[in-house]
Image (tube, rainbow over all chains, first blue to last red; front, side, top):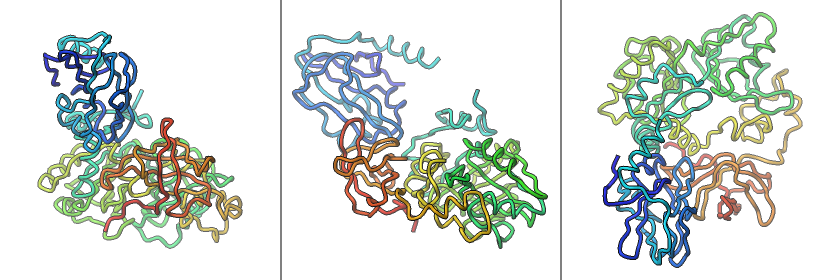
Length: 126
Length: 358
């Protein structure tokens, strides 16, 4: 299971890359492997407000729909439009296939380090 | 506590993601639902369907009992021939859908849905007349399904006992030295075979098939692909398109009801069931989203039906669904709206099946 050290993680299996004043958000390798082949993503639009810990959209696999939670509070500055036609990029390259970028960040959820996230996954599988 | 099929260890070894289904632990997928679905459409897939039930009806009055319990007519079958039929209650609703294979003049092999096995066994056993017994042989049997355009090539490496026609079987065949019934049936819309063997022989048979299929692209496939394949092929699933609240005419299964038979359970109710006021239709989602089971279907402001099964179909590359709609909206081309998680999504009625092999 791939868990890059330089990223931070939410308990709901999103990854966060904190750049200067922006957060880039995606789904972890563990998340995509649990979800299965993704066929649709529903994401917010640029300009939308997002709130840490709240659902910001959803992803659909062949079998089911799952909410995606935003780990930070702020405004959506960009959305990865490639995912509209190619949602399977999330399965193929979960750490390249970012979902949204958020600016004007005013708060975050509790974020885990790579080691803490690895421990979380292990405990969930017991 | 779920039951394990005889192939449980094979699923774990092959990386199967195990889930609970109808009281059994089975793989929903191995490599991925889409890859498995495409393998069956283009090459071959191998499924463990040992959870299904197998009942044997035997006796001088076996045929008359079959004809009374089920809506189809089982007269005039050859040994090894199979027929599909609904089984109805007195009110005309469906108790289960099943396949009957004639083993001999007085012996019939009945394959039933896993979820309904106990119900079907008790229903039938309680309604037998004359010289006839019903035996539940489900625990003795394992079932493997080999499905796809390359299925025959693969099977031919292991046996000559290959039924020639769709819906026929070789009751006493030998595949890789394993005794089994080889049936040319399936739930995928492709050519393929269902193999019924003794539970203890299942792992060896699985291994032989996987080995024989090595150069032909054979991969193991799970319940997820089983569902997307049957839905794409427009095949009904009990608990979705069929239930005790739906009669065979509403489900589009009229060709399996023989009203000229002297008597069968549900005959009188079904005599008054046509024309139907609602019926099973195919829907193609034209907007963005996936229509799923339970989603209401609207025409204008009014709800005219409900989705019974729906998913993204890998071969077609689009979201399709089956729904039970008021009959006046059944015409292909009828525009409808499906409500999916609070969003209105455009869809259109299309003919069934969505996919037919060429």
